[in-house]
Amino acid sequence: MNNTKAAGQTRREKYEQHQRRRSMLIAATSTVLVLAALMIFVPMAPGWEKVQKSFFNAAVLTKTFPKLLDAFLVNVMIFVWSAPAIAILGLFIALARNAKSPALFPLRIFGATFTDVFRGVPVILTVYLIGFGIPGLGLPRPWNSPFIWGSLALVLTYSAYVAEIFRSGIDSVHPSQRSAALSLGLTELQVLRDVVLPQAIRNVVPSQMNMLIALQKDVSLLSFIGPVEIFRQAGVFKSLFANFTPYVGAAIIFLIVTIPATRYADYLMARQMRERR
Amino acid sequence: MPKLKLNNVVKRFGENTVCSGVNLVVDQGQMVCLIGASGAGKSTLLRCINLLEPIEDGEIFIDGEDISIPGRNPQDVRARIGMVFQNFNLFPHMTALENAMLAPRRVRKLSKSQLQPEIENLFERFELADRMHNYPDQLSGGQQQRVAIVRALAMKPEVMLFDEITSALDPQLVGEVLDVLLQLKSQGMTMVLATHEMQFARQAADKVCFLKNGKIIEEGPPDQIFEAPKQVETQNFLARALK
Image 1: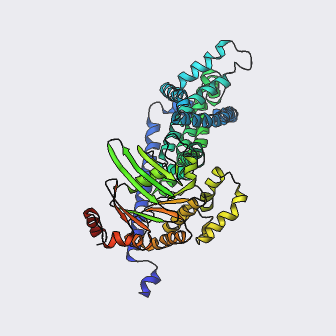
Image 2 (image 1 turned 45 degrees about the vertical axis):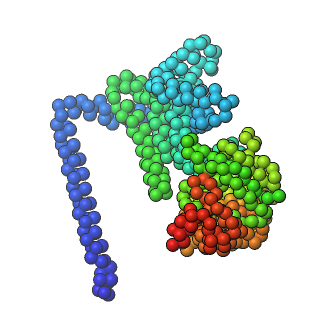
Image 3 (image 1 turned 90 degrees about the vertical axis):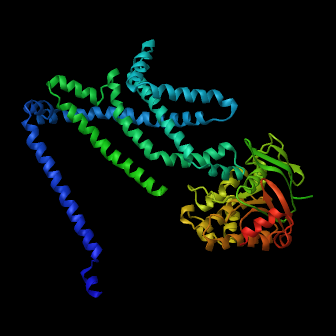
């Protein structure tokens, strides 16, 4: 007995450690093999030299990267004012669709139509129609700014999706919570505000994180109607240097932001799954 | 005048009649136990009394006042009738104290500081003072159910309804919850229980009603119901339930 304890490992622990080492070894070997294959075979492709020069040009990257970062600030700006607007409008649409009182019936129809329309039209089309259409009314500066109307297009589209997520969150709160709150004498509105919504919103935080990540990327669609954000800036550099490397630079900048955000969203999602169990 | 009176209460869900003409009288300070198989209509009857379910026909009186008039605002009725549920239904995003304070704050329009002494006193009375600041998922089932009772009592109800409040508990936790009921009874609370705890009903109830198919088949003092049931249905049910 003392001997096994001194060794610090039971038979099972020894076996499991052996298995772990084995799996790690296999994983490492296979990773090395795949990487080696990529490094050997890709450069053997006939167009590799050209691709390397036009997509992975270090000189172009160092020259353009700071300016790309500046342009990315435009994306961040548009994101920062659109995201809260989306959260508010999305929640409003979700509540409108769930309104039960007959006086609010028009609101209900409005909510349903809104989500149908903006989920049914491609984002880029909404951006075009609103971004070119509304300034086309001949509005004076600054009201003809593509920033305003492009952002509005994003807000409308994303609110439709975000509203549906909020709605699923509201539905995910068990009816017994409503019963309990009503039995205490709370009004429908108080039940919604104090009991249902706090739980509903908490339940959908991970899903809404994914919407934020998608929004961060879709801000680039505004480049089609004018604002010089990172994608358009990369396009300008592409023409200037006759080289595609700025696009790779832009992709890297996106990844620096989105990978941690995605990981965080996954973490939240996993934690929620654990809590539900 | 009876504290609570049900007169020919009918409740249907679509084609399905769940309560088919229930008559019940509960006097001030009485504990009435509703017994019967699952699906007999016990829970639905309690939900009807609290106006959580609108009734199709009949009347429900509290102190002689008809609370079941269609279109009547249910909030002030519910504020006078406390209800405790099988699965506790505590609000998971609030501490025990916040759970108990929500309704008095919103309905009785009192501030947290006004309520604090009164509610803390309730927690102390039911030996939950050290659990006040815990969230529901940090409490045992028995503690959660006692917090749910405190939450209902915080509204100072005149009548309390208990819907199989020990059915979701581990057997060793049932006792602490039943003790709370005895405590309330000794303080003169008017109570209606739907329950499967036959021993408890027998010892503590002032009146026992046996329900089947949405009807009270037989009612009377516990001794009479448990020792000498008159109806065959009651005899059959008890033979199985007490086995």
